[in-house]
Amino acid sequence: MTALTTLEEKPDGAPPADSAARRPATQFGTAAMAIAIVIGLLLGYAGGLLTPDFNRPGDTSAEAGFARDMTTHHAQAVEMGLIAFKNGTDREVQTIGSDIALGQQGDIGIMQAWLRSWELDPTGSEPRMAWLPDGTEMIRDGLMPGMATAEQMTQLREARGTELDVLFLELMITHHIGGIHMVDALLDQSDEEDVVQTAQTMKNTQQTDLTNLRNALERIQG
Amino acid sequence: MSISTPGGPERHPTVASTAKKSAGGRPASGKSGSGKPAGGRPGSGKPAGGRPGSGKPAGGQRGGKKPRKPITPVKVTQERNWGPIALFVAVGVLAVAIVGYGGWATFQGSKPWDERANEIAGIVNYREKDPELVAGGNHQQGSIQYSVLPPVAGPHNDAWQNCMGDIYDAPIASEHAVHSLEHGAVWITYQPDLDAGQVEKLAERVRGNEKLFLSPFEGLDKAISLQAWGYQLKVDNADDGRIDDFIKTLKVNASVEGPTALCAQGVTATGTTPRELGPQMPQ
Image (cartoon, rainbow over all chains, first blue to last red; front, side, top):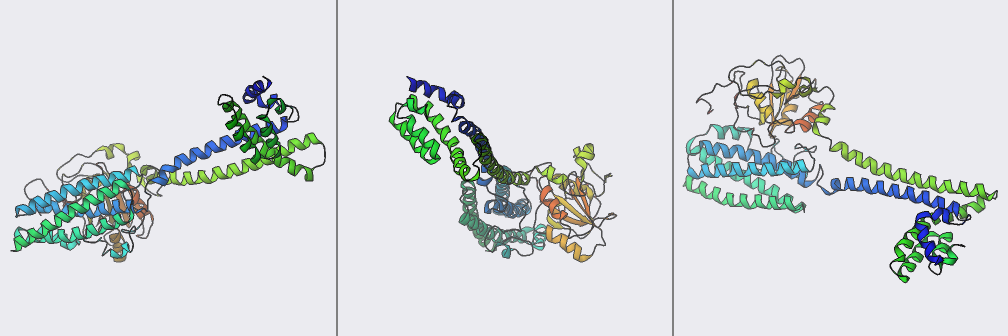
């Protein structure tokens, strides 16, 4: 019985219940425990706050770099696609143009939403393509692989008729090849499920596009 | 010790170990837990856990006490208690400081863009200064008088200036440029007589980057002026790092219409007269 009483009392009044000899140590123990618990809780809380930041892609991650650079790469494809849709004379050039423009604009929305959910700016702090090995060396005059130059874009805007159809197809083939190269670089590095899945979809789409673009070019040039 | 004795076998190991060393206390409480019925254990287990914790400092004190102070036992006990507590607290504070710094750094990095924008030295925030100006985004034909030059917001032409990293070598119509700002572009302008090397440094930042465009602007009071919707920053030199801060912080972020607003399909011509509505749009 005594044993039981002691057991019950201890949780509540451990310090007073103890003998005089024990008291100092127990009091100290209570204080130490309290401090330890508070510190532990604080550390745990801080850790909990930080964990999402450690888990989601950072500012210099391959995922963030891909989202930003592919947004820019896609944006030019949208521009080219809209020109083809508007000025193309070949029906397939028009349909492919609208398909690419709307599809890639949708991708841009997805990628920008990632960046927002990762609490990152749409603009990176590192150079273009810094997220992939030797990536920065692939930049030509500020342009990522496959992108058309300002002169080529002017040419595309001014072209009409079959000249436009052919130019669009050629520029878009080059554009897609560069884009697939960038997607492959992301797939090599990332294990972020949603990013990988979206990138894989981009690759599938662009590979199918490539076949159709090449066939169309062959047909038009006859 | 006297209390633990009546407690029976369960108590003995716990208390005994507590007095000697903390490491011993834990296994002891574990044993008692396994040995006795479930009902009694949880209650006894917790206090037992607490004691080992208290036992640690106590043991340490005792060990340190003997060599240090052979004086009155009472005082010694109290003083001994403070040493480990101080250590405990010091280590704790250090740990919290380290984790706290990491948290603070991360927090700083993820600060909202508008807070970071206000931290750019010299930036003029027209969203705060002139909310009415920034609110207006209606389409309007013909020339528009802007109160701020180069303009940072306001009514604008239905057509926007192409802002796909376009580099214009002559002044462009503000009426189109403001529309591009509304779409999230940053418009970099410079005095027409700015040194070609300086202009090239600006062009390097713009070329190949959508939501950016560059043009000379007549009558600038500083060499370079950057515009985003509702924001302006004027600097003297193209090497100024604030140019990059402005672009990173405000490009797309300052957009009224979000990241998918178009920069393509805009006016690619130069000239300060805005396009009139009509069938002449095809360039």
